[in-house]
Length: 111
Length: 111
Image (cartoon, rainbow over all chains, first blue to last red; front, top):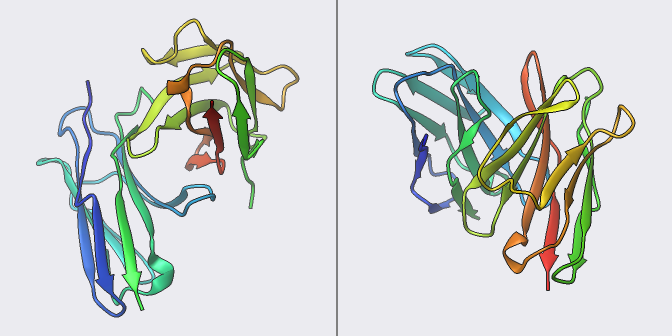
């Protein structure tokens, strides 16, 4: 059974603070690692699809890194804003089977 | 931007009743999926569908569940006799060359 773990489960930060959270996944049979941002009552929004060890991707104030050898990815948010409040999901893609999701990190940014 | 649409957004049903959740995937995608998230738990894979047949299903997807693509555009999930523990958010997704796109989900409440 493939296991994807995310930590922390929830996080409260002040507006302007930078923050990061972790996704751990199996280091074998790796194809891709997906990050999604999910606001309640909306579709999970794709942030990044990461495939290469050492990869770093950036979208505005959000960036992510990937270590496939040790099986982890970090998501960073620089200068958090209230609109960043959401659940951030990572999903492991072994390539020949559907995505396996972590439980998500629920971020609340307090103004 | 193409979207995956799901209807209804919220369904309340009595235990033992049949429900059908509907999804319209992105038109040029070939793979379709149903996932669910029970409140407070991980997003779980239910079933994938390709070339008009189930390509993979999880142990959750028992005989009470079925999927169909009745008319070439809709993709439905049927639960024959709902149980209280079927209460969850059900997400449809489709995938193409550039990754997965999720719908905004149907919240199913079984009472």
